[in-house]
Image 1 (spheres, rainbow, N blue to C red):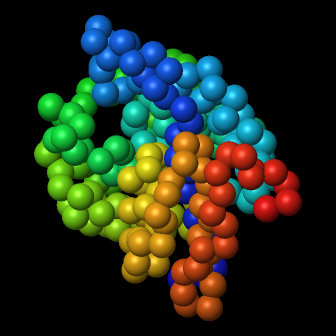
Image 2: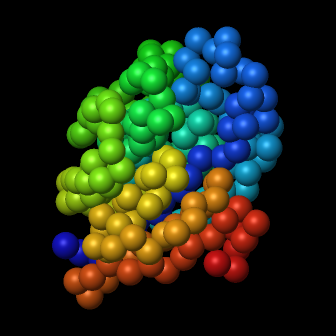
Length: 206
């Protein structure tokens, strides 16, 4: 495989973190949007990545991840490929059923989404931690093998840790702050981490 870079970003601050009562009456209670703070964070994230040579943008189907990827998609002029394999850990301690997400048709009316793309991996509920990590390893291998060039994967804390562990063969990510960014590079026949940063360190010096 030729040299390539994989960027992995976690979504920004969630609406239900700011307003926990939203969960009680929400139509899709496991699919909150970003909070106002989250929108500020993801704009900073987009500004950090706008000069990077990224060829494909993949995103979890959860709204908070799509809204995180949206400003990046606009700045890079890249449509989002919605990949369910990058979605949240389907932990039964967090969720009582398979989480509903917005219909693709609704998302396409608001965001730049690549309509021909279909998810390469569909997760199943409930999901243990080891099953989630195996899923992330499988989708990481699938995407880096199938798609040439540099990739950006936008998802969740589980996405950051699971994809990193899948590519490197060990989990070197102990913390995944909101709107964090990880850069993994394939060079000389091996993967290595070149950047781990949270939003407070996302400036042009990294």
